[in-house]
Image (cartoon, rainbow, N blue to C red; front, side, top):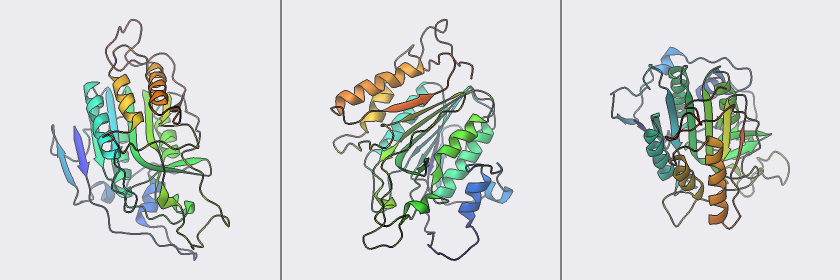
Length: 315
């Protein structure tokens, strides 16, 4: 089990209409392959970057995942400590998913309140360490937003005054999905409980920083096509918002997803169908979880009869 707790980076981005060199974070974002056509590599200096993050693990003192491939590997992120827009459930949701993933035999890396650089470095390390994994799970709870048909997951240090600022200051979730699909083996599961309202993306009153006069970013996340060997799941339908339950420890989506994942013998598509039905009932039909899949065969994560549901399906 890996736990990464990092302080909010004090560095801030500045809006400047004049041409400028990309910041280190923007360069890393491009170099890590999270944008179209970018090369996938991480400079050695960045790989060995020392941080003040508090890191603990039950199996090793290293902050990086083990280089030995695991049949099942998960990177789970819970971002809650957003300045001015905190979330009540996101950290608890990530801890719940960590517990479930460990029960299901995943080697888990957990990150709480990650800034952009920490998130990018962790993804690079995780993907590099799991080339032979049978199943990869990426889970994110926190704020998310869409921009021109692409989805972005927002780190806790992002200073966003308009939707244009998402480029280079938030994690390109669409690019991450595309990158994982290029692994050539194994199954990729991406779960985004990130369709909650993201007020930091909306320009402050009186601001001139808008894409169009009077425009506002579309709500929620955008619809996406799952590449081969991939299932992408969302807490609610495209363009809609999911609940951050103020009356409980966990969001309705993650709470019900965890319960279904623990049910033995369920193919993964059935897990998400049952989750959708439970969330629909709990929210009175106002929240409709949604997913897209290109998996071939059945994947059962919790027990069950492997003669009926193979442990790891073909891509």
